[in-house]
Image 1 (tube, rainbow, N blue to C red):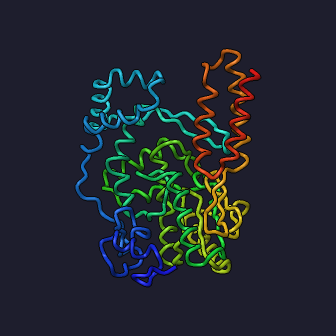
Image 2: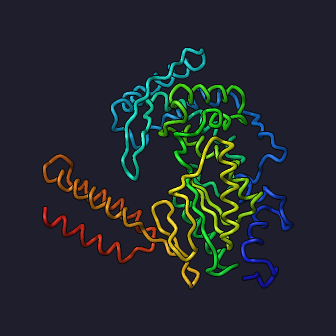
Image 3: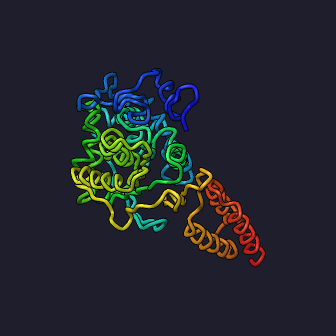
Length: 393
């Protein structure tokens, strides 16, 4: 529906005013096409990063601040408590080793998680995590984030799963204002994203950083997280690689394919358009771009759905109602996993193997997540189920 004052569709005027200009922006320089600060490379070269020094990363103050961030929520671990208790000495020793070149990363450990899918996770010693977070927060992330599109939603300041879901809802609402309920959604899943990401592609993410920072980042990636082909997730540095390695694909979708309704969360890409035929062309083009990176789409998880049918994204089903409302409902398997987990915790509580209230706290966390969707009746049923379960123990 056009704006009465400007004659343009709603949303265009607000975006341009946000960018400080009322004239059309060049391709790739609007807030949604460019990076978080509106700047992207225009000549194909990476943006330089002047003003950073190694003291910003390996100095005592920088490492101390990093330690205070890393300890949040994990002070119950003995290794973390020991490091923090002797914080001044531990940080000073780490800073000296990083400065004189005697620093050696310690051995990582791996473990498997089974929900929502089986994955191998790398666990990093706390001492190494302090150094890596300082490197990430003070140099790598600020440099890498400059060229990311606005709709790249994962693991960034002010962004995350809630941001990604809200962006998808926003794009679907905008689609409705222009085209009604007629339209299609393309959900692209990258096959084995971390496991298949070539090391050369992952390391190229840091090309825009100062040379000394790039050397340090590459040393960490090769020394602690590299598999035979790809990477094992579990660290902040691997997350940065994950959000940036597909940045070229993001810009291709926004600036070459000109798809306005687009959001990406790591290896999940969602495109909205009125024409299925055009989305099929987009999928072919995306496959070409992924092939350049040594990656491929997952044929079983990549699908087309009508805008009025359910589209799976980050644990919820999204669909466009006839009224224009975007209905977001919790996926059924989430309820099944919750009930299995809560039942196990209840049993462990009854045997004295978990503190009283553990199951209720876990249910409260799941309920807060589920309440983000349009699932009032489902939540009422789950509440009754939980109370009955507690009464039988």
